[in-house]
Each structure stands twice: as C-alpha cells, then as structure tokens.
Length: 227
Image (cartoon, rainbow, N blue to C red):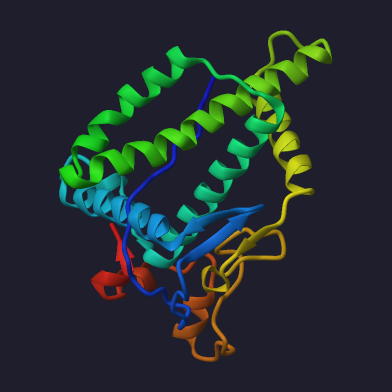
C-alpha cells in the first residue's frame, strides 16, 4: 500500500498573480470552510522544509525550487481533498487501519519536531487528518474492488477506485476556491492564471505559466520561491 505524502509548510505571502487574498476563506467544500490561515500555515511549513533541505549538502541536489504561488495552490488542493475525504468517510461510515495510521504518523514525527514548538500540534493535526482520509479512501476502495471480485488489487487498481469514489462524490458537493488561487471550473487551485491582466512580456508569461523555467524561478526574490 502506498500513501500519497503531502509536503507541508506555510508562507503568508502574496502570490505572483498580482492578486491578494480577500477574507479568511481559501475554499469551501459543501458547508465547510477551509481557512486562508491553514493554507498559509502549511505553505510556511513546506517552504521552510524546502529551504532547510536546500542548505543541507546531503539533500541540496534533490531539492527543486518552486514558487510560493505553486506551493500555496498545492496546499489548497491538499486541504480540499482532505475535507472531501472526511465527508466521504462520514457519509459512508468508512473506517481505517489505526496501526497503519500510527506507523505513518510515527514516520512523519521527525518533520513535526523540526518545526517551532508552538506550531507542532497544528502541523500534526492537519497532516494527520490528510493521512486518515487517505486510509479511509483506501479501505473504501478495497471494499468496492472486493465486491467486484478483486481480492488482491494492485496499486493502480486501488488508485483508480479511489479516484472514482472521490470523483463521484465530488459531483454532488459544491466546491468553491478563492479566485486568488487560480482555480479551474472543477475547483483545482493553480490550474489557471489568477492575474486580471493578460501577460505580454516574457517575464509575465513565465509568471502565468503552470511550469515556469528553473532559471525564471531562481531569479525571483527569496520571498517568492521555496527551496
């Protein structure tokens, strides 16, 4: 079984889109609001982790520098998925393997201990909620596949089953993402340029790109990139 890891950190910075966050709502999933505070917190955790890794000779070669805008979008998507999975689990009465959960969280604990003490409980709770949701989706996928006669599914079969469960549930849930995060029509943050102006210069076009060049990212001020 493979769990999708969520990188975490937080940087309360204004993205390169030219827009600033408005209010405290980053997104809503049904009746539940995801706060900009949680997005900024996780962005700071991720950026701090990338920055520290980039300074470590043993890890520096493996670190890819990214824009804070992309990290923020990734954190929005992770939090939306975490809440979506929580709602699916509640709706379907899904359980999860607590022994696996404890093992995963034990493996994650060194990352928790690396952040300031005042941030540790919040960090652990947010990431723990994400992992719990993944385990619940894994259990639901296994049940669904077993009902189809697949008793020992491979990773791809489980992943596809989870995607189907999440996709079907998502059709009936209103997901709204703050425009500052550049969501597409399906509520996936970072999918479109959130700028109100049309990019004309090569710099602006790189800023609007989903995958700007490493050279362009490297030339950004330190506060606008991670790693």
